[in-house]
Length: 93
Image 1 (cartoon, rainbow, N blue to C red):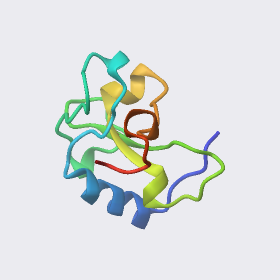
Image 2: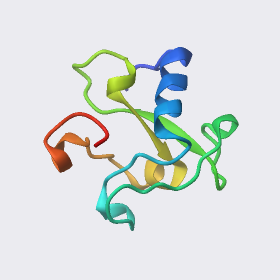
Image 3: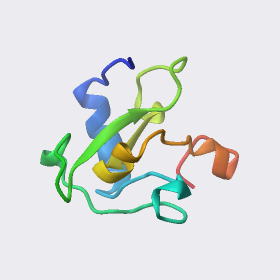
Image 4: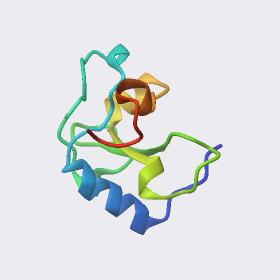
């Protein structure tokens, strides 16, 4: 089971997400970035606006660069692919 991100890391990653799902997995019924709107207070809730913080690489540190914010629908859909598989870099281009 992945370790839990510190609250400060989750907050930094959420700010980076601009309140939108960062999932890039087109197997989740969206092409490109999902961008579903999410609400900070709704972490872990299975309602519109719900979301979770996902770790992509177990060998990497628990920092904002290894944390992606995804809507609850993408989170429940299964494995979230790292962004590196889409743009050759580990960032949000």
